[in-house]
Amino acid sequence: MAELSSSRLLASLQRIIAQFFQQRPLVASSALGLGLAAIPVISHIIRSYRGFLALGPGGLPYNFIGWSLQAIAQPFARHDVRESKPFSDPRIFGHYAPHGRTSFLGEVPARRGERPHVPTYVAPQRQMTDHADASRLDEMKLELASRVAQHVELLAIAPSQLEGPKHQALWIGEAAAKPAYLAKSTKGEFAHVHPDGSSHLILSLADAEIATARGWAERHMLSGIMLPFNYVLVYAPRDEGEFQVWKQFLDAAVAFNTASSKAT
Image (cartoon, rainbow, N blue to C red; front, side, top):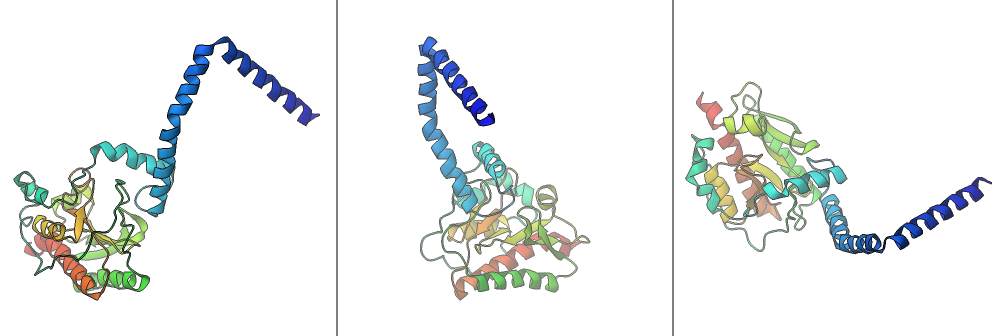
């Protein structure tokens, strides 16, 4: 009897809806037009959401809310992230003084080949090609830990505030002085590695310019907005030679972000 009642109710609703649109042809045509117009929009949202999930978990919720948050941030995002010239803008120098224009790198060659594919989602920022293998990723994590062992009084390793608890990050230690650009934006975090082998490092403006110009890195789309201007994505090392270059970048990040602490 319950199934029969439900069927009758559904049939009644269908008749009411049909009569409503029959009596209002303009409303019916408008509804049809809106429905057809919405198809490509809905299709785009579905494709974009699937692409967001393909990036893997990061700092945003790994669901539709996270996708929506990054979509809301798109109008504020930068799209010149592979250009090196912005690092030479005198208007930003003061924010990263006194060491912002100092290079802590040695000689760095140009990266060979094409840059990896990095989708234009505001977050998480990931590369979708040229991933590092698991053994290389383990080596990179060990390098983070070794820097802490070398600078116990200055550094700490702890879960990333920017990427979430599954990512270990380098932080300025509790007893050390945090540069103003870190204290305000990342609370002291300046380096972490992603599961694809890419990493986020805060380099000096001079070194970020070198890394970007020579094809090793690109800025975050929210750099200079919600993140330091010199917050860059360094691509995953593809071989031992590139791993050695990555270690140079890591050392440069450590040197830059602890320079003020060493001077006090």
